[in-house]
Structures are given as C-alpha cells and as structure tokens.
Length: 340
Image 1 (cartoon, rainbow, N blue to C red):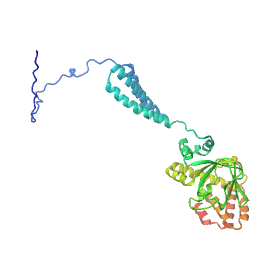
Image 2: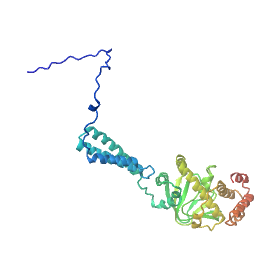
Image 3: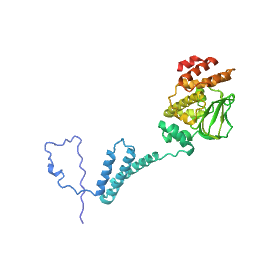
Image 4: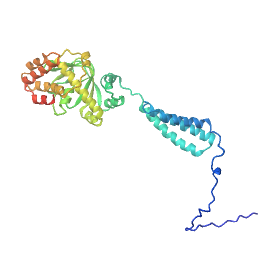
C-alpha cells in the first residue's frame, strides 16, 4: 500500500524580498494566441448583431427606446440559447437571464405607455376641437376629465344659473351638446354653443373676489349636456400641472373674448364663433366681467343694456360701446386703462 507523505506548510518570512534580478522571464511566444479557436455558433453572432443594431438606432426616431429594449431583449435570449446549447456555460446563462428580465420589463412598460388612449365618445369632439390643437396629450386630457368632474344634463327650459341666487364659486362647466341662452332681467345677451365654457367670465372674476353670485340667468334652450368640474379640486389639479394651467388660461381667455364679440353681435352663431381665434387680452376679459357686474349694480340698467347692444361688429364701434357703457354706469375706468 502506497502512503502519501504530507509536506509541511512553508511559511514565508515577512521581511522576504524576492530577487527580481535573477527572475526568469517567460518567452512571449508562450503567452500569445498561436492557435485561434473555432468560430462560435451563428446564434452567438446574431445576438451581437441585435446589440449592435439596437445601439445605433438614432434617438430622433419616435420609437427609439422601444426598439432598443426590444433588440436587447432578443439579443439576451439568443445569448441564453447559445450558452445553454452550444457552450454549456452556466455563468453566461445566468447573467443574460438577469439582463433579459430587466430589458423585458422595460420593453413592456414602454409599450404600455404607448398604448392608444380611449377618450369617451361624448368627450372626443371636445378634445379634438379645444385641446388637441394645443398639443395636450390624450393621457393628460383623460386625467383632467376622469377624476373630479362629471357629465350633467339639463332639459329645455331648465336653468343652469339664476341671477343673484346661484353662487359662482362651486363649478366650471363646458357645454358638450345643445344650446344655452344667457339673459339679464329678461333681456337676451348671447347664446352658448357646444365646446364653449358656460361660466368663464364668472370663473375669471372670482379668482379675485370670492362669494359672488351670478349676475345673469343661463337657461337651456335645448336639451343640453355639459362637463362640470368641481371648482376647488380643478384649481388644485391645475396648480400641479403648469402646462395644463397655461392651456386653461388661454382657453378661458379666448372664450371670454368670443362672448364679448357675441355681446356686440347677438346673431353670432356656432359656425361664426369657431372662426374667432384671437389671443385674448386681460382687457377683453375684464370688459365682460365689468359689463355683467355693473348692469346689476345700476338702477337704469335697461337703457344702458340697449345702448351697449346697438353696436356693430367692428372693433372700433365695440370700443365705443364699451366707453359709453362705462360712462353711463360709472365703471372704474382706471381699472380698464391699467389692463389695456
């Protein structure tokens, strides 16, 4: 029987210094690759081609990140196949499995974000006419209309607001279907058509003064359907979305301008109102607000209202009618001049 003799462990002193001068150098030809191994399987090369193509996709391409993650996922899957079937390398398979899971999750998330947003049929015309031209994403519009608002209806003859009774602090609405009539003490002022704010002048005025009542009566002239937001919750939401906040400022300003034109020309219909697309000024916004509020605070309002409505559709006569209205009812001209 052969016996194995265990050699004792050799302990190197701490102060040992190797003799580098007498060290033997290994010839270069013994470390260089003299015989290259065979080329790897085709699966290996296809996987690397996927990686290369994914990395050279230009970032200006709309689907850049989706294509990148997709190609990386395919490349990792091919590497797993190569390592398992042709290389039998467990470490390569494990690492590429990790990369596969990471890229696949990213790919699924990006595809989910690109999914088509389904806007309700009742709101599609509103989005296409008011929000889509201003580049509001469908998902942002869906958030705006899906959390703290509801669709309400009014039958012909029912009132949306009654002058001196209904508070203006509760809601903000956009008409979706039908037609509404705005009047003051029985005098017709203007109509409200679909895709227009119902109470935009009141919304604008109560940003400065709370607790006010409607100075006009708004009645459904047809069977109407409108989108109604909670005033307080809408304000908080817009504060967290600066882009949408600016969009609302523009839309409300333009709507007030359209109402100012329709006050000067009560025959303005829905088709004509679509053509009015001017950048609203704060002067125009204050004009409608002051017109409504000042009529209610004056005893001889009927004569002044008729004087205001006798104007023509030109911009110069519109300003003259405003001047006559301010002079007749004592509206603060200083406030008007500051903003104009």
